Length: 452
Image (cartoon, rainbow, N blue to C red; front, top):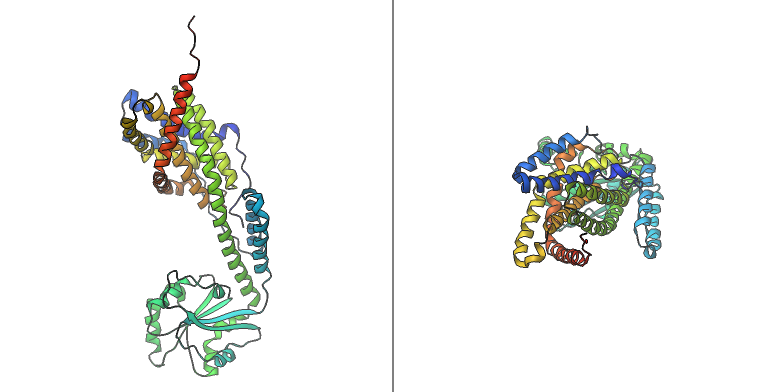
């Protein structure tokens, strides 16, 4: 159960390729704008075209969730290992014990099967004795009859006690109400379920059934049962349910898988929070290392080398945090595609224009040589890193990413990352001012070369 993957080892040169793309495109924009005077919009088109040429033939891949209890247990255990590597050791032991108890509770689930007849508050369910006698078969059964679903609810979250059932029958009063549609939508699709309705007019039942089928989602087609008043008639109606109950091992196994999948999702959410905390430290460090490389080196080729090393290390560290199972060269292709999308959307241009506006207020400090370019490069690194983190979160467990799909997703990932980073623009601006002042101070205090 592992949206988490083994630690990634990236060779020195291949790992740095992502930085080459980022750096070359940054440097290219400065060269074309300052020396050749090509408009930045035209450069974006050239960059996008170059990106398509630079990427090799993409490898398609999709995440496939486990189809067995054993597979889900393995993924859960893999997540537990990731918690151990990311959590504070002082708190990990207690949390690990609690998580193991959750896992064992699901795995210890055994017979009998459970079936719940449910509805909303105030609805009169079929008489319990009649229902018990009608549903009885050779398999033992834990039956629950409950009309406790609220009519008004903010979340419409399916109650935990019903989520853990092996089978569900939703008793639907006619005419169909909006509240019933909402609760039917909340029932998980992988939970074996039927709808039972009460119809007073047997002759008109076919018309009522057709009307219901036209109003309900496709998943309920052929899963609507008509409630009856006698045991024999009700037995006949409940035939498909009794047949399903005969597959007790299969039903309990599917419930275990559903509960394990849900547990895995919950753990992954907690794990993602830990990963983001670790990533922010890498992001902050990398952006100023990039800025320092650009600020110190007016020669584009030197900038490219510095950017390659720094960004290669950033992607490598991110791959370790997300336990990324993607091969290094494919991971670099993903980062390149995101960098191209960021430049095409004018991330550097936007940050540069904003910084230029600030420069008018802060005079010489912000107009120091290379400062604008350096801070813009830092911001680009920040946005690309954020979008890369989002991509890794979405593609956990995929060893062969679909790069064709990424080309479609990249603009949205970059737009989302840029928008989220703009929220923290004031803080970034403050950090930038402090960093630039520090660089200028260091530069002014450094010894000047003596002329012979």
